[in-house]
Length: 509
Image (cartoon, rainbow, N blue to C red; front, side, top):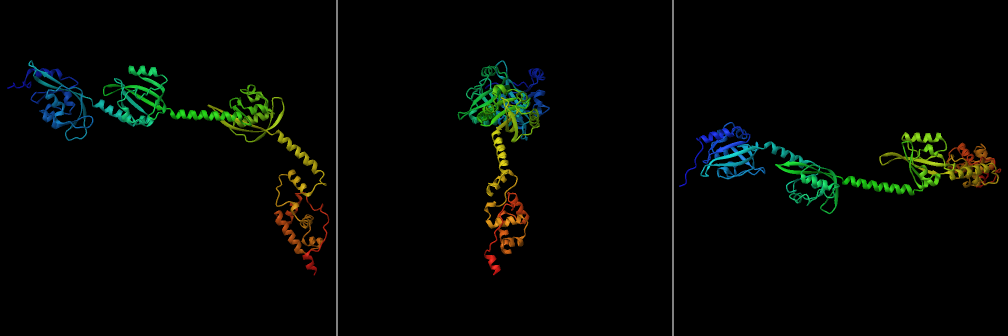
């Protein structure tokens, strides 16, 4: 029969051992091979929220009844898996992490990191079993808070262990940005999913990663699952997770910026092509000093200045406007932010000739500089034609005896364009209607017109009603004004010839 294990319960060695470990920061629980809890230091008692060994439990079974243990994955420990049971069975272990709850409470109060120590006698038989405990609650609470923050952070991030460069954590922001599957990322290495691909300082990043040092921000291009790429800013920050050195990679998505820059370049290219090839004279001026920044070919063709002669010079040096007062007025409106629309001005060309132009402006941004776009159109030919036409009309209107009434009316409309024509023209009235209108212009009433034309009063009234309907009036003085506005006042009409129409004959009968 094997000899019984010797107990330390009443030995001097236990007293000496207690004196040695009493002041340690780590919790120490001494257990007899017969499963009795011999002693615990103040640190161990505090880590269980009790004040005496009796509160901790007299035996291993008592301990299990008073405290419920589970792993960090929320799985409860079986009786045989309790660290205090494992040390009694003679097992040596280290770095076992368990959550400890008081019996009857659902949530754990502490997180313990436990290791075992078996003290043997000269015959190598267990003489005292030691449970060494560290309270790592604060560390794991901080890690829990970090993980919650890491997962909730919309900024893309991923964590790799430095010992093997394998990814151990990835947040939803990175999944959303890249389209990678979470399970496909975890346990793969930094170079399987290369977060430093085509980085502009890749060699520096690899060196810092190898040394576990901070990786500064740099542009990189990530490969996406579908074969596309994404432009990002990547940076690395060394951190510890569960006592393991790791590297936290964070990202900023630059793809929207790249697309915006591409769209801006395309827009600028289109603007440049349109600006250069536009048939209208265009110039871009800076508000600072009213310097010309650029001109197109139509502008140089209009003014006679080459781009080298005019670009970069203030307009007051170029003497482009006819007068300094005109230039100051135009520049004042531009500085006030007032757009100019179809303003008739006179420009002085390089050879000194002054021409008529229509000028419009529009504020634009050239890069980050506020500028103004000038559009100029030469109307000197049109203005000359208008002047010639006016002179011709004035000459013709001096002698109108050889012109027909319709030509006279059209010339009158050109001569006085502010008068709007109403109804039909004189040439669309019948001979009798023109005779009646002429007598209206002379001031005759219906009875006088009837006697003059030797017709009945009803006939005159019918003629007057038709005249009103055709020319769009309803009063005699309006009809007279309408006729005079067309050069017809009745004096030039030959005397009407009285005739007996049907109604007149009926009246005499």
